[in-house]
Length: 291
Image 1 (tube, rainbow, N blue to C red):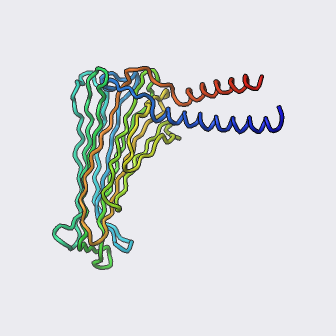
Image 2: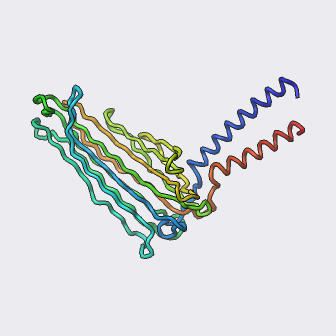
Image 3: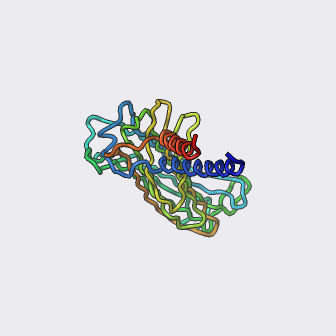
């Protein structure tokens, strides 16, 4: 093989490897487009369900930085396979809300918010996923909000924070075809808002990031395959708004995801699929070079 031929061969190999790595990532995010049956009615062997928790906080911050006053609330719900579960059964969280008033201001000045979530069991037949739903509402008015953070009354900005985490553990064998459908992300109404959803999967000590979703992004299906008991899948959603002194918006958002067991055979784990692709590619390159 000449030097030029070797260089071209190496460049071709690098391009192909980059392409195959991209294919592996795509398999992670879009494992199987086929909808399936309820995962709670047809649970994988050894699987213990979903743990869902949420935290919210609302209050006021000193406009020029410094002091903060806030009130907080949190809730938790465990959704587990149950032999008595029936289609249409709804696991609903305890609604949580927070309200913090300024020391003085307009009658409408307040920092408040609420979050609710639920999990609905779908039928056992094909194309009938479970549904995971949550909604949040915030009112952050600071038209003339004044708060004493320790040095006398000063202008204050209102804020609201919400975070929600859905977690499930292995083992879930790849033959099951279990998946989680990530909720679509709504577009935001104000430049003072932020919203993010992060999805990770892997060992407790070192999970890998599968997806990061921002406002306006479309959700995708993610494989729940985890062959080991010390692996976990985690969906984390966060929302924040800071309302500067002199403004008063109110916003509400609803999000809905899904979970199920695919009716069609599951796509192999990305690492397995990528290994097979690499093997085929290397065999092709050897044949092409006469080796």
